[in-house]
Length: 422
Image 1: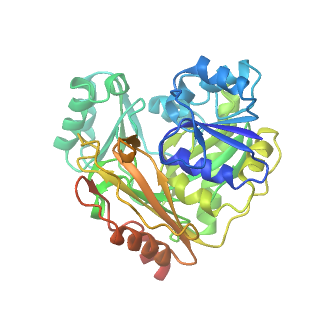
Image 2: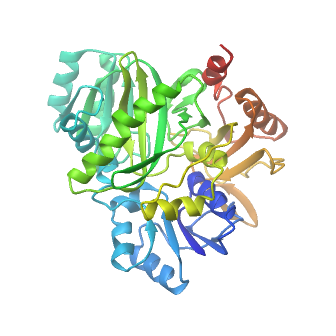
């Protein structure tokens, strides 16, 4: 088979690595890909260039295209591939609205009784400020549209909430995505990401992961696209996971069918385990980043066969390694704010067995790989214990020179290690 992966980040590099393991695959292309993806042939076509991508898929006789990021999904890339009679894995733009509009997602959850925080959707600055004044803090402020994982502020004071509202609605920090905001009740509990392969009402859940959104150790600093992750999550019981699947993922897939937005692809439920059971924080319409990088390495099945089965409505009979996987992101100094590009990417000693690397924001300059984004790469490891997986990753970081333009969190999975030893 010839496979095309759409995207250029760490998630797409992880997808490429999973595809490469399949005995059924001959050639892997990635558009546009990045300089670190040695497993694929990178093609200089942007994710937004629909006609060029369709033409390329036809010319190279691509058997399946896998769409990684959210932007092309919401622009209708899957619709364009389907219209051209091409096999593609991902939701249509109609189904992807569950990620494209937080207001729509909340309305859907309310209508179909899917557990989530109480909320208000606000279209003016004055309305948003009035809601915060009435509700008090802590409170959560979210940009309605796509903001690369950075459009959420968990405000511990009303002043913080007012500041977030002003940045989104008055200062246009996220452009059109922040012209409407969703203000939510703050929920206490342990957050986790639950991704599932979905085709209509068929739901095949993956193992849960836990992301680390805040930039700095101790969950301090601004929200990022994710500074590291691990899977599975020791603090969750089998019953917790089953409840999340039956009360959240399955009814959401059913609701989207009812709405005429039948979903095929990866449905990602960002959840929180509260005293009253799991509740939804947000939905994504694709693989999470960096959760993908720690979930796919634990999949025993042939990944391409899984995607084919799901597209055909066949249960892929998912099997998972009885191991843990942890990954830590190396980010450019200043991220998620203004950061420098062009720093030489450090050299890491990767053994390729239990330790791996996914490149994200990199490019080639004068024959060398340099930073070209906020999140530059992820070093990950699988091991029998979470502690060992994390130790493996930090040993690799310890041997490399990551000073001069980079930083990473030194406490990834510390909560998971604590709960697995208690």
